[in-house]
Length: 212
Image 1: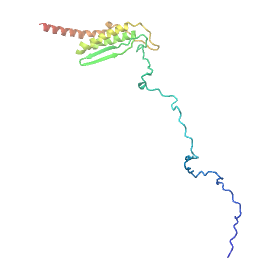
Image 2: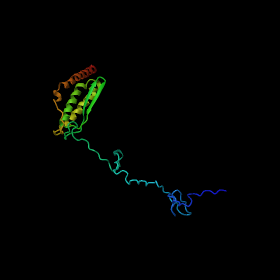
Image 3: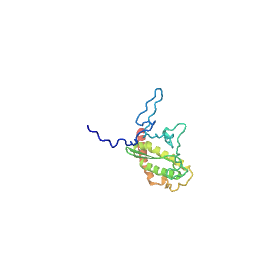
């Protein structure tokens, strides 16, 4: 029987295992078992990172509530409207509308310009709208009897309101309206004589028929 050859590596020093754990070192791949009656140890992952804590004020500049939903005890700030003339920005102004009416057979149109207006701009608009009404506001039955007289009376009140204002200068870069000629000096205003004469003739014939 033959004898096996000797192992050349026998008796050689064995190098230390670099992955071996020292005495008493915990194995990271083994989950620790809870002890009876003791707390359960938390497993910490080597890749876990701390979760960022939320900011105590997520909105450093909180948004203001909408004016519609504002608290009734804290009303929103209201920007005041313009108090000067709507056309030229003059400080002395009155908030009053100027009207005009156009009546042609069965078609009627109502025009209205809301204030505020100053003395000069208001008087200019009254003259323009009144002349338009005197010229085109008589050519339908309802306009002749109702709407045109009401419009002329309204503009008469507006003219008196604007005449009480003190003259004032316009705002920088803006211009006031030209008052122009008075209503009685404008030829178109006398077109109203035609329907008025016709109305007088109709009324006179009706009275004559009733009397006869």
